Image 1: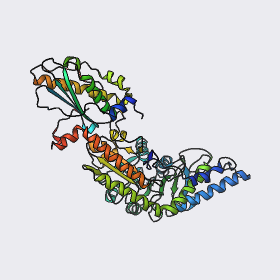
Image 2: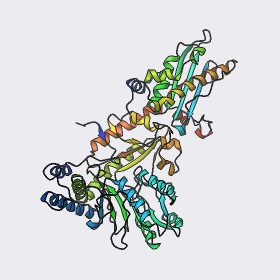
Image 3: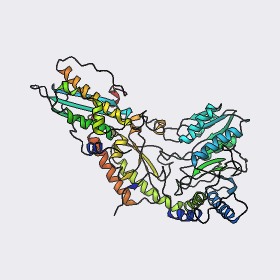
Image 4: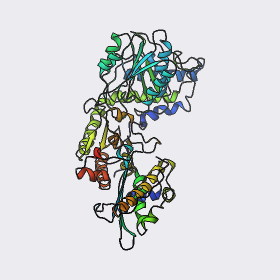
Length: 405
Length: 139
């Protein structure tokens, strides 16, 4: 029997794996010590657990455990990487290069940098949602200190050419930071092979708990440092003060270990389901896949259903299927997704988009149900869409003079 | 965001979806909104030429659930009214009836605009002077 509602929004967050919760539980009650308490067994026990988790996290990304700085999540890690590098390397320059489809945690941090005297170049992605490394290189200036390009995009799942970009950064002696929130645990990420100097990621996107993430900070070739953004007890090699979230970190470690063990098999299984969903939905006429079809995370697809508005579409099944839309009819500005607009999609297509994010517990039965529900709802809403009627009558919608808001 | 039961009801069972013959003299058509804004409403009225009463009303809407519900409700209210009564429908009555939250008020405004546009189209076709309306506040 199919259990409803179905969760297909794994790019927003993932459920905790029960094995993760099991690993965490003792650290709330009997093993509750502060990892910074150096002089009694409670502290030693907590510190030992954190050290072990640090190894588990480091192993997943091919790093040394000493290079892992635990944070409250990816947003904090993004802030720490960008602001911390900007402060630390102020004597070398003040220019940062990023791209226009980064997560808000990166974009808004860059906006803040601009307000504090920094200079930021926002490189435009290509229509397939992938940044062209040549455009990054062309944006480099003598005062460039950091290149910040996401590993994979959260709305469309496109995977950026990380190795080519990091090679360019290295060639010019510039640090390379990547927000790998969507990628770590889903596809192989290796900080050495990928040439990454700084990397943000978080537990809750990979079946770990919310409220814990990490910043990878390279220690060798080159040795990278970031200026702490919070003052306090000097935890995490002085880069991030604050009592460590021991249960969260233990859960993060366990989640990383599970991803490492299960990724090859899991990503293949999920990709098959994703492809089934995607192929079926793209069979519906006037649908459009957003983002590059090949260079993409295995568990995401973002589709525009022309002539149907995304939020209206969601309403048809969101009691039973949890997905998200690129339309933002609820916001006062009525602005659709800036990511989809950056691909050159018209606002109408951006308003018609839905992101499906599959995960560890997604079943074929759920996918079959989703295909059926989405297909029916698209049909039903098109039957009441004036735009669909005009399209069917052969009217070019661009020739109509719309009364703009 | 949770929708009110009335919005859900209109969304699931929209009243009067369809198309009237826009070339008929006694049919007025209003098309408002824009695809880029995520809302397009088309509202049509068919007026009984003997009595001057709206005998049929149809809509088609591209938009969110609240936009669909606002236009569906408007067609229900239009039937049986004269065209002069029709233009007195105020968007806030729609907001109240459907319990629309503040971020969805623009959906009701759009429905009000669609009614006015349909009535003016009818008036134009029938040699009546077009009515002037103040610009909607919420756009």
